[in-house]
Amino acid sequence: KAGVTQTPRYLIKTRGQQVTLSCSPISGHRSVSWYQQTPGQGLQFLFEYFSETQRNKGNFPGRFSGRQFSNSRSEMNVSTLELGDSALYLCASSLTGITEAFFGQGTRLTVV
Amino acid sequence: LAKTTQPISMDSYEGQEVNITCSHNNIATNDYITWYQQFPSQGPRFIIQGYKTKVTNEVASLFIPADRKSSTLSLPRVSLSDTAVYYCLVGIFTGGSQGNLIFGKGTKLSVKP
Image (tube, rainbow over the protein chains, first blue to last red):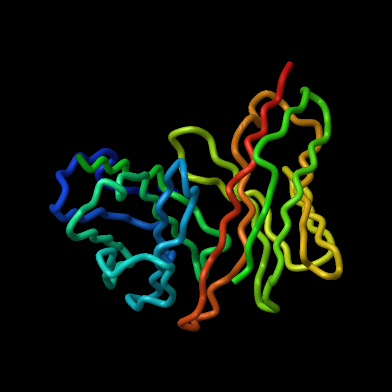
């Protein structure tokens, strides 16, 4: 079956802009979670959605937001981009919770 | 929130057994321990998950002592293709608003011929 699909794979944005990343989970998976990965901080949890509701949120500023649609597809938005937002953004899906999650290949965001 | 600590790097040779330990103080009652493997330019791949004692699947074993303040991932007879970064994850989403997941910094395993 198809895996988790993230689009786009690569993105270059300018400071101050906003960006929207997309994630299509594995069919039947209702939980979608997002992560930021950087060389300095490693993997950090952003938030998790389950059945269109944000169920949990990590320690990121309000500039980072997300949503989930009725078909479980999810989007993540980052407003007022900063240079430090440059990272690999990963999405993962699972049936019920994120600990047995399947990850996408990520979106590489570069802020210049 | 549980904080996790794992070795930054480990070296091994093909055919050896590799044990990677993760310390997770303040682990909560509801927390599970999960290990992921990540290759460059790919998302992490689920390896194994456990709550207590020992769990084994076709690729690894996970040992968790009674106090659950640490866990050890055991990879039997590693090969060159096991060279990757291994992450320890503590937590679970129960639906509450205070849920969070803590990843370790990752252990870079290098397997040599």
